[in-house]
Image 1 (cartoon, rainbow, N blue to C red):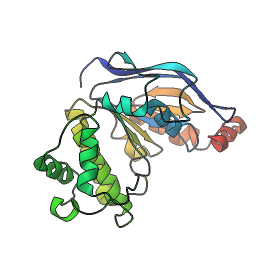
Image 2: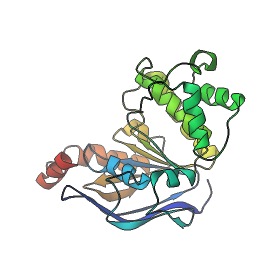
Image 3: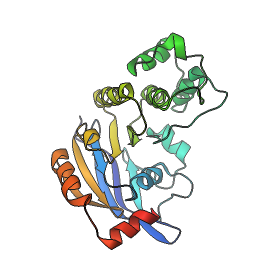
Length: 251
């Protein structure tokens, strides 16, 4: 892990439907570092992911996002992707009528690079998928959620991103996919890819270098993953604060 910051987020704020969802949220991420963001459902974690990617409707009202020293706050999602920022969705998209081979190739081309057959096979093998059995299959409902999650991770490996946002990567996956997530995160570390791991799982938090607790769209507490995990379990989950519960309902 290199020492310089690859991603800097400063005072990010966002309102949706007149509800304040993100509140002057700030953090930094180093190359090769895995930053866990944990919090209950509805605390703003996925909204943060969408805002970082600049998805339509989630453009921040104020604040600044800097990737490798470049201000990307006003860039489109495709422009951010070309600069090395990518998002692995909580629920991977299904592309009816597109093969696994084409799907993986598109991911590589998003960074302006061609992909070889050897690279396609390597990426699938990294996520425990047999290339000969899957490259010509369609990415559609015939694949299980775990298979689609693993194929998406293979696509991201081929992109060689600078920063990847993993939004609830363990959501709805099988045991094999869970094991692969840890392996892929290790590969990202080796490649100096910064990782933002968004989760509400204490098990997932163990894969991180440090962690932050998200509460009502703010980074409430940062530190060692075990410390944050314990605080989340003992203090957050039993929380009965009416304002917090109301925020969960609208976000």
